[in-house]
Length: 102
Image (cartoon, rainbow, N blue to C red; front, side, top):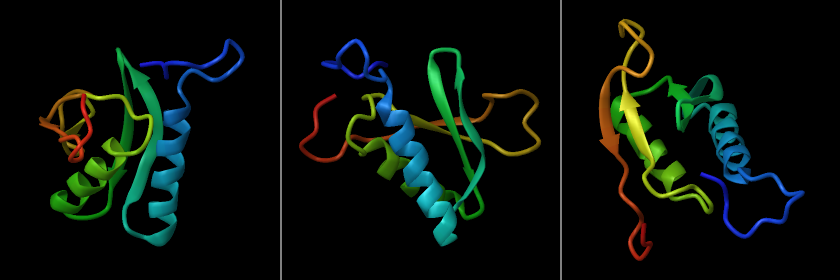
């Protein structure tokens, strides 16, 4: 989803770079590992994180969903290397922080 209110020469998806920077910082700190670069998949943008327990990864995903500019409706897919196909797994809708409307 493009960020509303941008001028014609501004990048329409600055939140993607913000999320990438956020995850890179966590990776450098050793909190999680970025498995791969983010990429567009259908009508969603996917970021890949690994390297710790599921609860920690879901907490990180919730923090990502709360970053300024991230579109409402963010979700996590819990999967593993044995998934038969990309995008397969358990979908976890990420709640909006208190006081933020979707």
